[in-house]
Image (cartoon, rainbow, N blue to C red; front, side, top):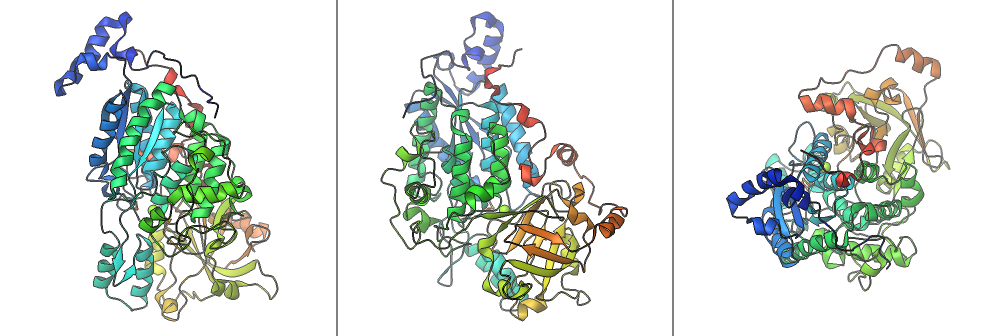
Length: 593
Ligand code: FES
Ligand code: MG
């Protein structure tokens, strides 16, 4: 392909620090302290590219911890290609453990990485990714600074097994939680199953948010072909770490930058791939945030226009049966993309970090296991993308319609023949604590025609936007075989969940969105045909309720929570930082002392 950049030899950014004749005094100061771990002035002044390794692994982020080892192979690759590695820590983002939610820290990690990439002498960077938000935060930062950058995914854990059955990360938790509520297993059995789902190093092995976001990085063209799905413990993971290091140096030599790769066409490709893999609903805010910082146009409607009609091709939990190892052996993300390309559903001309186009990368990368990666003509399911809904409860929300069961259809159809119109009675919870305290209260008249609503769980309300919308029904309903109720909320749900939920409602309740004025007992109508979701409450009554004020949310507990609340956008916009997208491609503007 014709390359859009100028790869003529030129002066490197790092030379402004280390080899600047106009600033002999400062240059000496910059150089001297790097010597104290054995680096020599000759290396730093050799004119070789300095490649950062943004290290996301630590004891605090177990999903990414093996990057501490992989970085050795990255360094080898950088050195062999004629570069100099400098490894540094990025802000840890551990999905399962950070309170009130790791989503609060995505923008903090982004800001931190922008400062590091901008303020230190890097010519390029390897972004080590894995656990959910580590991928979007790193790509957002690389897009803002526009330094040559390449993603190295950490890869999923090996497949988990429990009593002869595959058990996948997260998904097994949601399933076991229902079994526990139905009295089918004990707490001890619950724990054992969960532990069996995590048999090795790596991130979640289901198509949850981690696997999804690494697939998105690959679909966008930000990682080497096939990188996303290689299990963390496979020898190929170390090999691709080496090749990623090598390629980072070449990216600097060729001056291929995120701005050449992260185009609107690349984001539309990612949306389509997300549908085909049965990807996480969290891809919506993360892709939106990445696009904002890359300066690429991406709208809320694009999810439906380009993503909704794409069929589900990956037979991977939670939408399917298998886990990361089988997915990788079947061909991984390239095999999925290959199907879409052949069906005319992918822009094959997009440039990627390989220096080749998407189409060139995919030559010969078809599915080798049709049980796991289906053909476009004979998919797992038609129309597997997100439906974008609006109405008087919110301006924007998404629904994974592929999760709607037959049982759900029969229970909520408002009248025979109206296949796409559902009605139910709202039960409103203000935050997850309220839900946990009250869900099993027998005074609450929740039955199989109820719709559970969670508010106060958006970026402002929580703060950070929590994965709490996938609420399970009261235990007494589960014991009667009602395993899920429709849920609506201004928060998110885990990418590993399998509930028919209406999520990411924007504007959220805490920002004065329609959910704030909903009351328990109101009727809600969901019209999938018209993509509408409304409370059947008159305008006069809604205005009367507005006078009662917004539902209360908890106070900010840390300085960052307050700063976050003052700067965050709504989930439809990616819950990014207001105004930060004014800063684009800033690597050319060097800081001066
Ligand atoms: Fe880290 Fe799932 S909890 S990848
Ligand atoms: Mg999650």
